[in-house]
Image 1 (cartoon, rainbow, N blue to C red):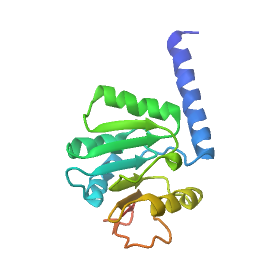
Image 2: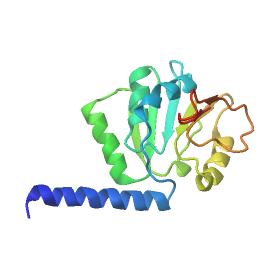
Image 3: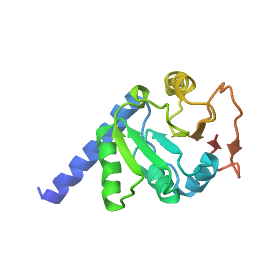
Length: 173
């Protein structure tokens, strides 16, 4: 068997295991549409000196985009599944950003007190029950939450929806 074929099989195995493990932990990794990054940026409404935290950074595409668009914003991507964390770190090597860092770990055990904006694409009902109380407990007054596709149910504050067309994914903030 050729080395290329063996490497291909290993990559497929890693992806299958990644989907299985993350699906059983917090949320499965599903990449967002890059065409929606601008709407996430608009909803985040970041200003210089603020901190943007991506909970469940996956391959890091949102964190990299925000870091490139807002060089004076501190951007932190948190990823629980190690292979996806490595992908986001590799992205950082290929396109380095001084204001961007990735943390390997469970966001439910991370301190989010300094976050001005928290972004997530993982608010399924099971994660909602764990993450939302943490956000309510830890985020400072005036912090914003941006959620892609999933709306935060029973959020006590105002919820703004950016969904230009019916077939577009919703960006909630």
